[in-house]
Length: 253
Image (cartoon, rainbow, N blue to C red; front, side, top):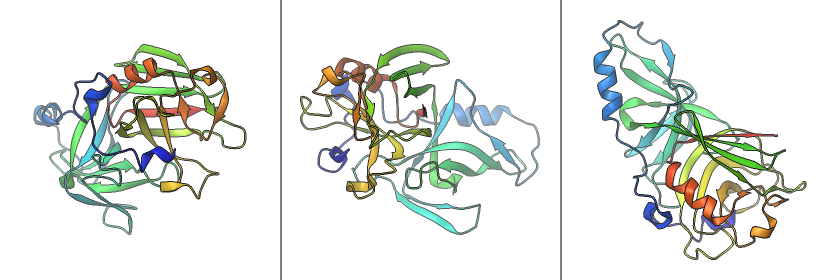
């Protein structure tokens, strides 16, 4: 987990074979809203996303997350995080006006405690659609990637040890990171998720969790990590190529 501070710089997607950008544009979302002519109750909240499509909020400048719309602030974010990559928040719902346009987004935040949420003004972020999701099954030591509801990858993974377990919960890919040394302990890349170790509280950046490659493929399938999920480097490249920032990640026991 320590790699997040010294190794991260830019969001170099092409380094792992991907040609995608950090997050798709929101023109399809805006277009969809234009076709909806039904009236909405101002201030009402609507879930956003389905089992095959979810949404991410890309911070465009700076944004404050509030405990509730207009309430006490929870956290503040800039356009880029401490690792120099775009700040992305997972969208759970939206608060709408009479025209059904979003005025606020209910988002999951990449800060402690795990799973914390807040509300951000819709005008301060750009909405992006995501069709992928990841399930990490700790008991089976398995990572599964879905795209548009279809299972497209299943791989064995190393998980946290008994002393430093991988935290379970509902998270999302909040940053995509490329180490300077692809032959090092984190392999050619990492998908940072919005989870933190619940025991390594003194680590750099609070002990962030990631799905990453490894230089010890012989340990894949074992419970040996400090909480991160390790996969073979060829698997990591495939995950990195398809799982954009904002991809939901569910970790189950």
